[in-house]
Every structure is written in C-alpha cells, then in structure tokens.
Amino acid sequence: MALFSDQPGDEGLPGRERGLAMAAVMTMTTMAVFDGSMVNIALPQIARTLNVSAGSTVWVSNGYLLSAAMTLAIFAALASKFGFRMLFTLGLSVFTLASVGCALSSSLDMLIAMRVLQGIGGAATLSIGPAILRSVFPNRLLGRILGLNALMIGLSTAIAPVLGGTILSAMSWQWLFAINVPMGMIAVTLTLRVIPNNPASGREPFDFTGAILSAVVLGSLIMAADAFSHAAKGDLATAVTFGLTALLAGLAFVWRQRRAPKPLLPLNMFASSRFTLAALTSLASFVSQGITFVALPFLFQSVYGYSAFYSALLFTPWPIGIMLAAPHAGRLADRYPAAIISTLGLSVFALGLILLALLPAHPQAWDIGLRSLICGIGFGCFQSPNNREMLSNASRENSGYASGVLAIMRTFGQCLGTAFVGVMLSIYAANSAIQEGHAVQLSLWLAVMATLLAIVISVSRLRR
Image 1 (cartoon, one colour):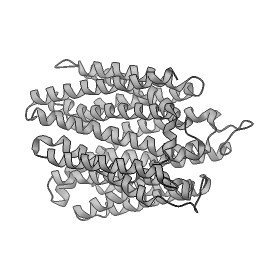
Image 2: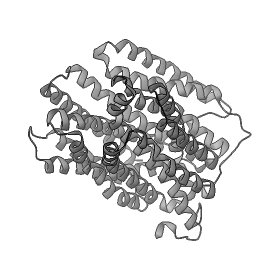
Image 3: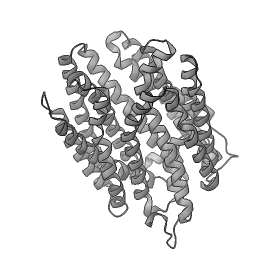
Image 4: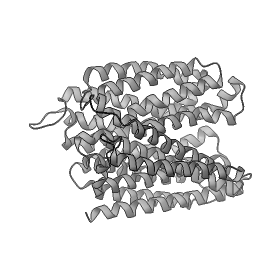
C-alpha cells in the first residue's frame, strides 16, 4: 500500500511503523466518537436506572465536553514539553480507566465525575492526534492520511447509533463504557511501541498563568453557549456573565501570551494568514455542522414523526458521504492546492444544506437521505484538505499547537451551533410540531449562512 511504502527523503517513521502508529491514533478516535454518540442515546435509560431526573443526566454529556474543552490548549502545549508518546499514553490510560469507572458507577455524581476524567483523557489524545500523524507520515502523504482519519470518523459516526441501540436493547448502559477497555489496552500497547516521543523540551518553563486563563476562557465560552441556548428560561443573565468572563479572560490570555517566555500558545503561528484563514474556515463550518446535527433529530422525530432508531438510519447517509469523499479529497490535496478543494467541498456542503432547508412537508425517506448524502460528500471534500492546510502551514515544532487549535475550532464550532438551535427553539417556545418545524427550518437556514461565511473566508485564501 502506498501509505506504507518508503521513498528516499521521506520524513517520519518507516512504512510498517507508520501503520501501527496510525492504528493507535484511529483506535482512540473511534473510542471518542463512539463514546459521544452512544452515551447521548443512553441518557433516558441512565435516568431510569439511577432514579434521577432526565434533565440532570444532561451533565453526563456536558461534563465530558466541558472538561475536554477547558484542557485542549493545555495539552497541546504539554506535548512540546513531554513529547507525543508520553502524553498520548497518559491520555489513553486516563480515558480507559475512567471508562471502567463509568461502567462501575452506582450514582449520577460518580458517573459525572468519571465523565469529567474521560474528557480530560480525551482532550490529551484528541488535541495531538493530527500532530502525531504529521510526525510519523511524510509531507507527501499528509492529505491522504488525514482523509483516512476523516473516513474513520465518518464510519464510526455511522455505526455508533446503531451499535449503541443494539447494545442497549440487549444489555445495560454500563456496557457502552466497558467496550472502551479492550480498545484502550490495544491503543496503549501500540502507542508505547511505535509513536515517537519527540519533540520534547522538558526543561523549558510551563506557562501556568496562561494555562489557567485558557481553561477559564474555554470553559466560560462553553457555559455561555449553554446558558444562551436557554435564554428564554431566564438564563440570559447567566449567559452574559459567562460571556463577559470569557472576554476578559481572553484579553488577559492574549496579553500573557505576548509576554510569557514560553507561551502556552505561540501567537506567531497566526502570523501565517493561510493558517489563520484555515482555522476560521474550520470554525464557521463546524458551527454549521453543529446546527445541523442538533436540528435534524428534531426535524425527523418531532416534525416528521419518525422513531429514534429510524431517525438514526435517516442520518446515516451523511457520514457515508464523508466516507466516500474524504479519502479521495485528501489524496487530491497532496497533489493540488488544498484551499481550492476545500472551497469546492464547502460549496457542495452549502448546496446540500439548502436542499435540506427546502424539504417539503411530507418528504420520502430516500429524498431526505439523498440531501443528507450531498451534505456528507461536501463536508468530506472540505474537511481533510482544510486540516492539511492548517497543519502544513505550521512548522513541525508547532504541529502540536496547530493540532490543538484544530480541536478547539471543532469543539467550539459545534458548541456554538448547538446554542443557536437552542435559541431558535426557545424563541418559538417549541411545544408543538408546527412551532418546532419553524425553529428547525430557521436553524437550517442559519447553517446555510454559516457555510456561506466559511466559503467567503476560504475563497480569500485563493488570492494568497
């Protein structure tokens, strides 16, 4: 296979070791995708089993998201201090052990605490996963391997709801966490064997002030987005408070990074306009994806009346489209300008979203699936070339930081998208199918606007 064949002058690891390192990273990626998708559909069963309210179980998901978001930038910086192998092994170990804790949880408080630990472990691995792939593969194969990584994410996203529903129909929710244990053990073994432990600069000082400020910024943004989505229920003041906290902490963070001897996040990375524009394009596109991923279940279940399982099947064409497009887009990005390919992908994505927003009142299932498939193909064509653009426009010594920025853009884009849908539902006080239908339709048009903004930003790269 071309990915694992060596050529003179290749950077990174020899061919066979590349494959093992890729397996370690993609196993962890699969665990994280499975965990997020399957846990959400298990919340009703968790509420019944632990005898708690359905609303309180939301923090089983939010606790993971919040802890992961608050530590993404910190772990991206620690990668340059301790090396990829040590940090990835630590993150995998924490994630796997926390999965055991989740499976053994006998109370909601214990389960939420274990999910917070899972989020910390997940952030340690996901923040540097793309950087590890860049370090072990030569530049000539970077787009291709990022395309395969996107393929794995798409495949996991397609399988997770069906697998989760199957497990829940036959066993208890604890098994959703238990399946992480063998996968985690395999990934740790591969990591210790093949993933390189460089770059590492253990004697350099760590920016503790910057770390605290970054956690406050990212955590406050998550809480502000969540409170803003419930503004109609009286949480507007809370949203404003968290938003102001994030703004002030953000200004202090930038001030600190300009003066720290070893900054947590080197701001000179953003001197590259191509890196900055790729990051902003990623943020806008994930806002759009976040809106759509939350709006479509309401459309399928509340408006069209489909069951949760059938709704999951209707959503499947989206990740299938990513699986079909991403590997080819990554391969093309190794040969042609990545900005052109990602812009074309965004255009197809926008077309698919417009088609979804224009769905009739009583569409056929194949019609819904076809429009979702177009969205997936467009997003698959965009994602891996854009990720390649970000990583290739950061120096190799800054690849860990660039990988962290990529993870932050994805996380906060999806959070903002979720908040926007919450605002639409709150405005329409969605207590009927007709009102929810209006809220969902407006949300989809908002996703179209976010994608058009991403296209404008992406097009601006072509002139550079």
